[in-house]
Structure formats: C-alpha cells, structure tokens
Length: 303
Image 1 (cartoon, one colour):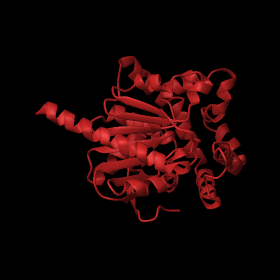
Image 2 (spheres, rainbow, N blue to C red):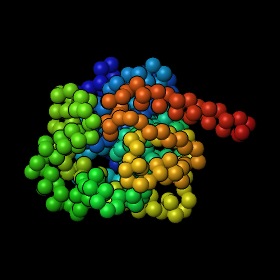
Image 3 (tube, rainbow, N blue to C red):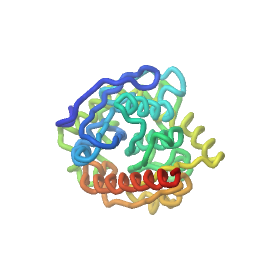
Image 4 (spheres, rainbow, N blue to C red):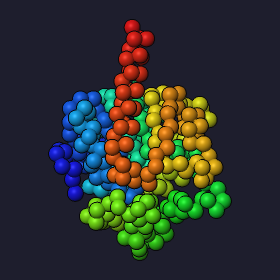
C-alpha cells in the first residue's frame, strides 16, 4: 500500500539499516512519523494537503512496514536515539540539514529524542497523542493504568511477550485499531488489513521498540530531565484529553520539556490524522508558521 503521488525510495538509516521513504512536494522539509500499530500510510490524507507547501518526507520507522527490521542485538537497536538518527540521516541524504518534524505516538517519541539530540536540525516539533516517556510511566497508576496494558506486556524481557503476541497476532493488533477508533469508521477494510498484516509481520521489532521505552529510552529521558535539558524549538501538542481521565495536566507536562510549547485537545480518537485530517493539517500548518517565525527571529538576533 502506497500514498498516491509520492515517490518511494530505499534509504540508509543509522548503522546501515534500510528504510522505506515516501517523498513528494517542494519547499521546506517536513518529516511525518507514524505511530502504532500503523505504517506511514496513516499520513496519506495529511501528506497530500501539506505537499503543496513542503517537501513532505514520510518514512516507515525501522521495525515497521516496509522498512528493515533488524534483530535486537542490544538495547540501542530500537532506542529512540537510534531511530532519531535514522531520520537525520535520511533528511540529510535528501539535501536537508533542517526540517520540521511531526510524529504520532511512537513517531512522536522519536521526534522528542531528535529534538533533544539534534536541536540544530529540528526547526519545529509536532506531537500527536502521547506524553514524554518519563511522564508516561509516572502518570500510569492504579486501575486507570489498564488503558496502557500493552506497554507493560511489551516491556517484559525478550521471549515471552513475542510468543504471546504471535499466538494471536491479528486479534492483538486489531484490538487497538478497533478500541481506539470512536465509531469504527476511520479505516477502510483494506487499510485495516494493511495495518494488521504489517504489524503481524513485525512482532519482534515492534516489541523491541516498546521494550526500549521501558529501558534505555526511559533512562535517557530521566537523565535529560535531571540535567534540565529542554526542547528549544517551537513545540505543538495535540491530543485527546487523557489528562481529565488519568489526572494529569498535559500542557504543564509538555511545558516542562519545552521553552516554547502549545497544547490543544481534539475531539477525536487516537487515530486523529485519519479521522480528522483537515484539523491535523491545520495544526501542522500553524506550527510550521511558528517555526518559520522563530527562525527569522533567531537570524535577526544573530545579525
């Protein structure tokens, strides 16, 4: 399954890992990173809208979709640092040393790490429906934590979670597509089948991605938080109002990580880029304009 009008390339990420990347449009670079249990296809509507003013770069993350799925040789194989390095290498190979970056859940976590590790490259950062790794684990307490039961399953040591998920792969991945879709109309049967089949073919790497979130990614976030590291580019967050359900203030949590952040709730399910693409395109366009203004201000101050 591909995005109509986009050119597909196999490109090299960190450590020589091959990534499937879709590209279209002209203008400043904008990278869109998908979430779970999806592929780059989740951006098909939004990407078309944004390609009128941007060079839109839409990869499958390592371990997902048509990208390579390297074996988890150590904790760094699927760390968000490694996956952020993938993005920086791909954009550089396409001729961009600076780009906007917008991610949905897993992709957003990659974006946060890219913003912390490569602030000179990330012009602005958009985040859809997720919290920073350290804050995610902090807010999941008591019976309300059952909403994120899959995080705990995939955080377990290698072996058992992979075996359990493979035994019921289509049901496992399909359950998230169904339960996180408010009225069951967001996906066509073909798109739903694509997500399920792609995920079933990537159980080991998907689990490794989540395992990193409970290990090396968490360690990096905690170290950065203790050191007072901040996201220095404009940051925009849009999400469901999980805070009212789980008792946290999403705007405040993100504000602690960024020097220039905005937060807005949306009346949509988790798969908001497909459920309400016009609203997400509007959100990204406004964020890109903030990024451009910040760049102009920084240039003027330098002069």
